[in-house]
Image (cartoon, rainbow, N blue to C red; front, side, top):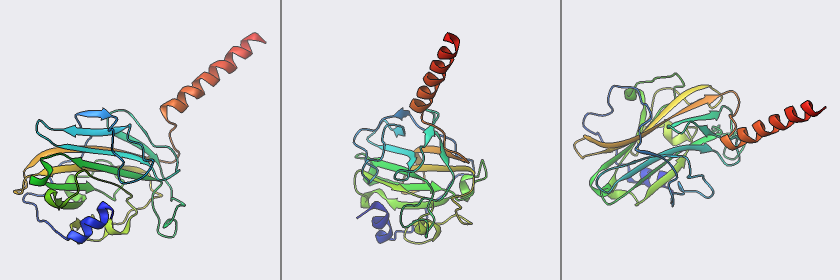
Length: 233
């Protein structure tokens, strides 16, 4: 059973004291890079470009953005800001049920998880700098989650737009064809609602996919080769 189905089955519907803070979400992490062993609930999902927060205790929170199946590449700046291409995925249940070309991934693990409440924040509004209080949320007691708890979700998934089963949906509807900025945060809270840790990322959605750094390097080498051949003629 996927983590999404587990959360829906729990139907916890927590009313976390204090809720989300009144502030925009900016990238937050302690390290950025590989998260060995993370699968994000799938097969072949990259785990080498991940925003990771670890605490002095035994808790790891992580998030990333990756292509949906064989969609256009998703790049990043090495500092928690990802860039993806707008558009509708052609992999079922999309395009009939429109999904974006990219997914956002999350990971929670550690001995401290069972004593905490875990909350994922996400938004549907592509405007930049949306306040955290306008985001939707998925909330569950860590004691009821698998350890590690991990999955790969798409903003086009219908359950994210319907409140219930631990979900508080954001306003409006997600448009996979829109360009703009989407922000995400994964929070660890005490049962009283005090935040003890978070990881957060930004996904900028643009008209065309941005090549991976390795691709850019190959293009650069090709251009150098062309220039050299021209000088020899």
